[in-house]
Structures are given as structure tokens and as C-alpha cells.
Image (cartoon, rainbow, N blue to C red; front, side, top):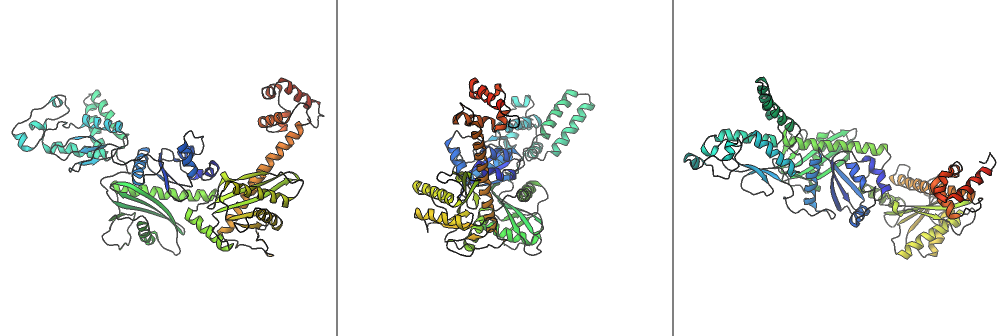
Length: 606
């Protein structure tokens, strides 16, 4: 995919955090990346010169882009990590284990310790996370240590050891960081209440903790202890700005499938999240045309069966937004109202809403919203309607342009898999034809194009469209016959403005049904070759006019004329240029010559 092609789809990418996935022409996942702003990040791949060979090769192979929006940059980072581990794309670094991000562990022991770890051990302990930033986790643990005193020692604090007074309090007790459970100075019930508060903080349920802190702050303020009240206020500010819980990873949810659906007229939009081991490993969004007056609750079960089969899901729990009649055995249907599962459902809903808006924007911008599979069906339809021997995955179209016999040029556009392949577009300056001769011009450019492909052993298109009707078509056939390529590809003529298709040797034209996708694609190809050819011809004509004007000036040659054109763009701009503007371009002597020439012209010419 080149920059010009990308500019057609850029407006459909949101300015939101999320992950993006690049696929090649065979729908192989090439790369997964994260972004704080999806459009800016993805655009950066197509708006710069690459210093690295791998990045250049990646961009060259991109044929399809998908993205998933999330709530925060942290969520994007965690989802990126999970997908890289799941699919190991070719252009991503290899992530083989779960040591990339840290967890907070609550040890399975009396008076549990809480600390940072990167290693998960199956010992019954509770692991919260992973978290995207080690620094933020350490900051959080420091806050917890200040607010809720906990032990940090590794002593075996069972009832027997405590009752036998085997341990003595340490410095942490005297500093106020621990309440001394080792000597029985703190009950296990009181200690566990602190642990529960910490769990609430880590899971994002901050309301009870915040309310307790506000009460304490008010008590200190009433007692005129303003320094202690200010310290509590700082803790409140920290908690209110902290979001510890990521909807991307939740060890409490485990393995589930999440579905969200919205209906708009006769169309339904459904979003799917596959969650394995608490991590989203697959996302999918689909548009469905409803044939009857089905309700979302009626069609969602059918879509669930199809999507679960497509992605080989074995989850025994399905999260949905409303009650459905789903008869598969050993499956639990959940309609969450709060908590982790509700957050996952909200994320699926957010993606289905954005998918719907994206399609609306594409329609407004007249952009194709077809998937690769849908476009392949269009090309298969074209194969049937035009009786082609092969599916036209590679189509090329030619058009001629001239102005009263001057500046003859020709243009060729290339479509692959139904989409413009702008890196394969070509302009032709006609070399052997004088005056107005569209047939000879078509012969020359077709011959040159496929002679070049032969020499470079490049693949030929399955379909060649000659814009201009029977005369130009016959000229193209002669060129291909001279190259001994007849039979290697199919060539058709497209009558100007009539959209009639001519085949070699047929006296009657073929008119495709007006409402077919194939005809819409042919119109798009025709309009594209017109645009491409006219732009080139206009530029060439402007260049010719400019050079012809400058040829009248003694001492100004071709190289100087091109330099002036590149800088001033037109004769009009050159005529009004000052000496100071001319000297840096052509030097003082030629600048004076140019100024003298234009000043000597009659006023109606100048």
C-alpha cells in the first residue's frame, strides 16, 4: 500500500487509543502495534522516508489494515502485548512468556504480603495485573504502604508461632509501617480488612476508600490539624487520578466470549471479543444485512454460533447485552450489570459503535467499504459477466489525451484485487506519433507497456481495458499481436461515455446491468484513468507553454527554463518576479536578461 492509497482510508481511522493490525495480500498478519492516536500513528508509516529496510518492506506488503479502539494508552499496550504473544507476527519482536509486564501478588499465607513480581507461581496466591509500567506499580505500592500498614517480612506468622511469642517486632513497626502482627499486636481480621481495601484499590473500586479518606480529612480539618489534612488531600488526588484496572486484562474473568450488537434499519453490526486466560486474544466486527424483520435478540444467537465456529472458540461462558434464546449445552449466558465483565461488554459496544460510524463516514466520502472477501466476489461477478477465463485480480486501463494535436500523452492505471495499485500507474510521453492519431498512440503505449513487462518477466494482467472504443481496441490488439501476447490476457474496449464494452471481432457491444458491482468498478477504473491522464497532460501542457515562452529569450536554455518552472510554476508568476527573486535562481546576468525581455513586451502581453 502506498501513501496515495492510504490517504483514501485515512479519514476512517479514529483519533483514539487502540491497536492496529497490518495484513498482506494473503491475509497473513504482518504486524501489531499500539497507539495513543490511531490515525496519527498509522499515518506516520505512509508519510515518511524510511531509514530501515525492514520498515520499508513492511509498508510495501501492507494490503489491509484493521484496528481496535480501547479506553486508554495503557490498555492499548497490554492488548498489543497479548496479540503479539498469541500470533507472533513476522515484523514484531518475539514475546514468548508472561515476564514482559509486572504483577502485584497477594501471597497465599497468613497475614499476606503484597509485592511486585514478574514470575507467576501456581501456589494459590492472587496475581493482579499485568501492569504496563513498573514505575507506576512501584508508586502505587508506595502509596499503599503509607495508607495501609502491611508486613514485609518473610516470617511464618501462623497462630502457633505467634502464641509462642517466637518473633519480635522490627524497625518497620517502630516507623509505623507495620502494626506488629508477629507479636499479636494486630489481629488477622483487622489485617485482612486492609488487604480487602488494597484489592478494591487495585481493581479500580476506589469509592469506599476515597470516602473514608474524605472523612479522615474532614476530621483533621475540624481539629485544625491542617498538615495532616493536606497529606490526606494529596492521597485523594492520587487515587482520583489513578486507574489501576485495565479492561484488557482481568484474571477474574478467565475464558469468555463477549458479543455486542446494534441495529440500524435493515442492517445489524456485531462486535466480538475472545478472552482467554483473562486476556483479549481476538477481536472481530461484522456487518449483517437483515432479510426479514428480525430483532437483534433473534439474530444474535445465529451470529454467535457462526463467529464461535469461525474462531474455534471453546469458551463455556458468553457475555451478551440482553437475554437471548441460546440452546447450546454447557454454555452459560451472562448479562453483566457491573464489574469486569460489564467493562468488557462496554468495550465491545464501543467498537461496534465505532465500526458503524466508520462505515457511514466511508459512504459519505465515497470510499469502498468492502472487505477483501467481498471485493473478490465482485471480481468473480465480473469474470462471469465478461466471460473471462480467469478472475481479473489484476486489471490495467489505458487512455489517451492531447490538446489540438499538441502534447500527446497516454496514461495507464492498475487495479489489484479491485483496489488502485498506484505504485504501478504509468504515464507515457508519446514518442513516435505526430499530430492527432489516437490509434497510433494507443498502439505505441500498449506495445511499450507489455514489451517492458516481457523483458522484466513481470506478471501480466488478466484484463486490459482500452478506453475509447473499437478503433483504439484494434490498435491495442495489433500491438499485443506484435508481441505474441494474444491469448495471454483479455483485452476489451470501453466506448466513451456509453459504458459499452467491445470484444475483439464482435460487432455488437456488451452492456452490463446498470446495478451490478462490476459496472461500478469499471466506472471507477475509467474515472481514475481519466483523472490520472488529464492531470499529467495539464502539467505537460503548462510546461510546454512555459518553455515556448522562454525560448524567445536569448541566452535562456532548456535547463534554465526547467529551473525557472520548478520555482515559479507559471509564466505569470515569472513575469511579476523581482530581480531579487530571480538572482538566486539563475544569477544576476540572466535575471537582468529575463527582466529586460518582459519589460520590452507590449503592455497587453506583459
